[in-house]
Image 1 (cartoon, rainbow, N blue to C red):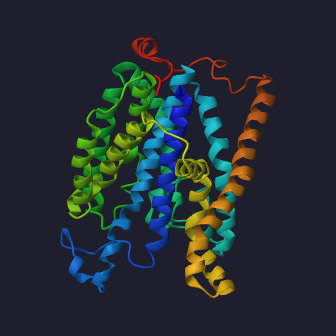
Image 2 (cartoon, rainbow, N blue to C red):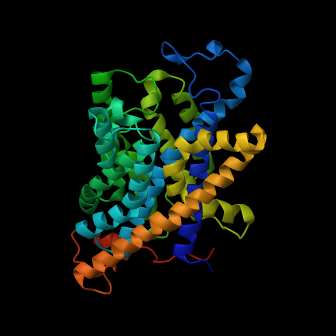
Image 3 (cartoon, rainbow, N blue to C red):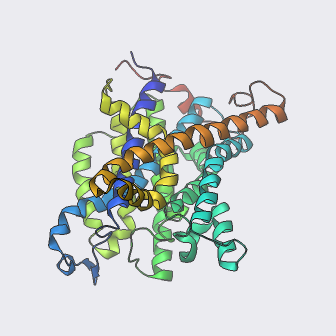
Length: 394
């Protein structure tokens, strides 16, 4: 018998590990070869590549879709936590999110600010640092890929947290399925506005395309899966047939410029289907499962630190060993080891510090017990009553 929590933890952590490895490989090999095939009008121009042999690398360029999987997983975990607590307290929610995200984030931000020789006393440096510190850097081209290019998605993630109370209000009135319609409509409307104001994008990740208004639907897909899973149901039927339809559409959308604004959401839909399958999969104790779950557990730290350090670490290893092959094979284990240290020091201590302060202020031994505070938003009665509290035997 596998408990509900164990099933969720294994499936989510395995996919989280897969997502960070996709992003890691994309960032590791992208600058070596190319990140995007150039446009010729509205279509990709593969004939323009200087070396046609590099076409083997093209599938790796889809590694950015690991970020879409992260957004779906975030929506799942946040909403699943709400469902298990049966209530929502705004103050406690944002307080816990702050201590979960910010201590590790600010340490990485300070480190890369120094590493990149950014003078925070200058106008440029102050703009870069403050916009990143306040999670506002993803709104402008000048700061979007500033101190650490990977930080854009963390800013979008925080902004999606701000929309969660509104998501719960919509859910309480119309149900979680209609939340998908609402968030999808908002995303389509934002796409129309962004294309009208800034034109069709040349890249798949831009300030307009990273807006929480556009990615809200992608995040809500994870919440939809969480709701179904909590009630002992599968969110999607005929998953293989659905993936056989979605994945070609996703690839095709990246080749036709007008459809690129939907590429991220198509990746998110595929991610939601895969997550739904992973949650109901019979996970067994295998070395690759444990390895992916371990990497998934430290994925936030690995995401924070990996991109600006990839080629610096490789360069220094190559200088010491005299072998680029050794350097590239040693890169991932070293980055994982460093991320584990960051996880243990910055993430875990940050969470414990937040719990200690909360208990100190509230003078309660159960400050993080979700039954302590009064609920600001409650579930629909039918969603409280229906469905098992634990997963069926697997």
